Image (cartoon, rainbow, N blue to C red; front, side, top):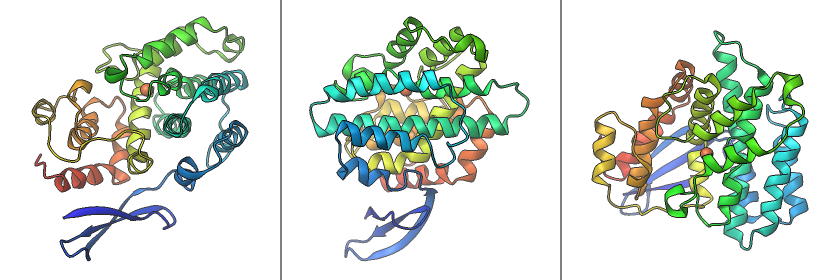
Length: 300
Ligand SMILES: [Fe+2]
């Protein structure tokens, strides 16, 4: 048995068809809202000149629920400068695709951050800071793309620390007027992908949830553009053990596709806001991951 992504043409949903040995479809499932729209095909086959990708980026950040995003202009300009300085150096299609995936991921994290903060009404959010943290959380990833992988372990590159240092060094003149706490932004970026976050900064907690929500919402599409490949057989014992014990899977224990799904499922134990868990459940994402694991022959 194998599952084949047969169609992403339905307006909002992926359609997976389970094929039997004969190759004939026998079961159809539809879940996980489609978020990239036509962006996956642009990433795979579109014009990857700097001008075309800049236009694409500006469109990504000015439509589909992002139009009302009041992110500070200066922060966005700096984001673009960093991204395209790196993009200019990209030498092959893989590196370009990797950068484009992170551009769209950043847009998705902004949407996730807004979704969570608008539902979590007990906090007094500074919307400019929310958007700044979301926009800059993976700023260190772009340079990492030139190393050919987004694995901090494989590249020996701590993208969160690198991003935090870049922000620390840059002078953002708008921050004071907009009430943005730079130390909190730096802390949020530095800790966004750490195994755990014992601190108290609410924006650091937010970005950890927004990143997870955005990644999980887009996983089928991220997998479809093939920026990282994982073996489809086997499961790492330590990953399975961690998941079953209710702990997060460590990055160094993620070696196969099954490990990846165990890690993603395990993220649920590390959410900071109840609304994030509600959204994941409501959108059918948990169910999708469980089905994928079953398909890979892993019992949880
Ligand atoms: Fe990250």
